Structures are given as structure tokens and as C-alpha cells.
Length: 279
Ligand code: AMP
Image (cartoon, rainbow, N blue to C red):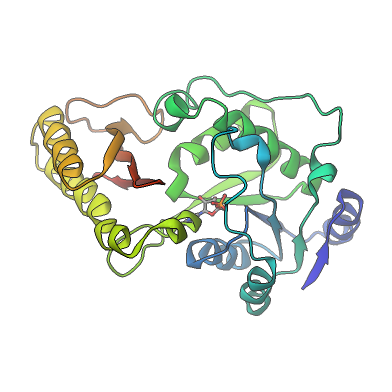
């Protein structure tokens, strides 16, 4: 697995593959890799000829009061985890490579980026959209893979790629969970032992809500009861909503279009997000 840190080196490698007609797949990450990330990398191996993984902890998607400084970083471990997976190229740019001093462009994606995580983290999706647009331009992959764990982010990226006429297929990958249901996340490392024990209640709750919506129970009542249950258990609920899986329009009565239940909570100092499809 070759590792490069400049855009010029990345382009040289990828250009050689492209000129041979090989299909290139990009998996962007922020490091602190876990099985969720690795599942994307495996999917990349099945989706094309060459796999490029990027590791870049993107400062633009963190507000000043968020966890950029404390976000887990362990590049050596990340490299060890990627090594057996047949990754062709690891791109680990330095901050100045991505954001030179006078960098000033910002991509915003109104609509899908509003509401849910966009409501409490207004900076977040423009930070994500900008860095992902840059990575897609730098690598020019045929396919890029993103996890459904960050479902709203996946839709934002799909929209940005379509709106900016990027010649790339955006694939979504299913959420990988711990055996007790907790969605894997680099931020799970922040949880205390007590919090870790409690954390799977988030998934259990939204899963129950999704199943109850499927059999026709009243959505507003279900969400209300679920929110109370989580609050009583010590979660601070930021949002708990049913939304259309394609447009993210709020769903308040059972619809025939694909629907998902979305939640964000604080458990102590840790922000957890999760979502499930209504079956
Ligand atoms: P991150 O490093 O948190 O920015 O995540 C990099 C990519 O991995 C994103 O596309 C995430 O949606 C995806 N991802 C993170 N956790 C999971 C998970 N538990 N299951 C599937 N994909 C995930």
C-alpha cells in the first residue's frame, strides 16, 4: 500500500491507472478507523479495480467549540488496519495541502443540508461539502463510497456531485454496528463504561419506532414517546424525526415512499447519531 501526502503525487498515481482504463474507487475518511470504515474499503475493492483511501481530519467541519483537538488520531493503527485490505493508495494530506493560507471557497448545499444535523451544526455540511468536492476533484474517482451512518451527509454529497456535474458515482454503504446494536463511530471512544452500556438504547429505540411506523402506528405519538424514553434514560435528545429517505422532507403520516427514522443525542459529552429505515 503506497502512501502519498500531496495532490500532485495522488494525481500521478491515479492518472497512470486511468490511462489504462482502470476503475478507481475513493473512500474518504477522517481516520480513527473502525469496522464501519473498513466495510467501505472492502466494498471499494468489490466496486472497481483500484482503491484509494483518504485520511484527513477536516477542520472545516468542526465549530470552534467542537472536538477537533480531542478527535481520536492514530495513523499507525489506521495503516495496520488498511494493509490487509488491498488498498492501492493511501492519501494523507497535511492541512496546508488542502487549505492553503488564502483558501476562501465554501460550498453550501441548501435544502438537504438544512434540518437534522444542519440545524445544530450549521458549519458542518458546508465543511463536508467543500472538502469532499476537493477530494473528488483531486482524485477524480469513478466511484466514491460513503456510509449510511451519516445518511444526511450521503444525500448532501449526492446532491453536490449531481449539481456540479461531477463524473462520479456516489455509493452508500450500510451501517456497521457493534453486536449490541450501537452504530460504530470513532466518537464511541469518548464514552465512559456506564455510557457505553446505555448507548445501544438509541438504536433499540429508533428501531422500535421504525417497526411501529411500518405497522401503521401514529408517527408523532411514537416519536414523542421515544423521545421521553431516551430523556428518562439520560440522553439529551437533539432531534428524533421520521424523514423521507430521498428528500429528507419530514414524514408525519405513513407514506409509501422510503422513510427513515433519524436521531441525534448527547450522552454525557458524546454526540451520537443514528438512523434506520422503516421496513
Ligand atoms: P468519518 O471518518 O467519520 O468521516 O467516516 C468516514 C466514512 O465512514 C463516512 O462515509 C461514514 O459515513 C462512514 N462510516 C462511519 N461509521 C460507519 C459505520 N458504523 N457504518 C458504515 N459506515 C460508516
